[in-house]
Image (tube, helix red, strand yellow):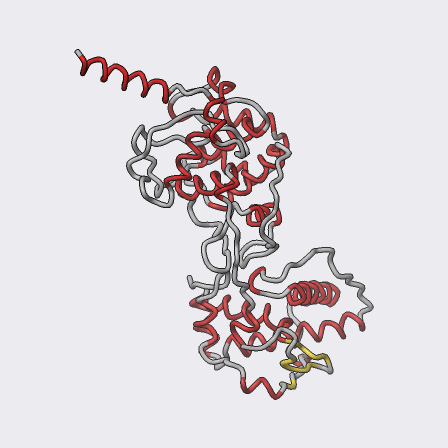
Length: 389
């Protein structure tokens, strides 16, 4: 009889914990962005891993669920449909609502996500014109990628009027300069995939990664203080400061930071084209030769634009050092001169600048000391520019 009473008491305790009211859970985490909504049982596949706390946070907040009562499957991917459900729940909770709102309209099976989509489109009218969201909702069974997740997460957070205190000063990473996404770096929600903070936006979004980032959004104690290394290609590839003069073209000094966008762009282009690389090799030229000629062409356009009385003002785009590993000045110089080239070609009615018009560069003394051997291989290894087809 005594054993029965003990067993009954334990069962009552389990039921009490399972049905623990939101107010009691919230008292445990008063500094959370949204209050805990429910209890949950520990998952066997996150126990003792770096995902354990994040999975617990997201499940207690009601944003995510396990795949069953004992498993979270942190390495598996999240579908577009699942991300829509998470985003709708997050918006509802950020704006002071509860998840009870969704219970009367919840569906089962493959269409379970559609009421959540309807909620998001009602609450965030701008999504009707959002091409990224259109792609997400048109392919509900596809695995979501990291950039899509943060694009939608950003829209939800902004629509809810939520802003977090900044703890990191980051305005560019090698493969992202979208300030809406970079706000997650500044908040300590996102840290990137390497020492440079590379986003790797095309990578599939895993359940564990989504849980980690949502948990940092919710719980200030889990946010990151980042000390990212800058990717500075002038030093990385040429071992020189960005303002080092490498050559003079028609009396115009070209610095390393002005040459770098053309250099890495040309090297990467041939790394990603077997046919182009083969044809270039057969011609006896190298990507470096092509890059130098391209810069000569861009500088020539300054004189041609003046001859043709073209007025091509600089753009209003704000550039940030670190994006693609380039300096802000290097990006601005490249973009302006490419616009200048296009304006000249349009006026002349030509497709390319005639080769006989190209000026010849005068290389600075430092040119012969630059580490130019195996440049293509070293570009292959860089974030953003790396890899081959």
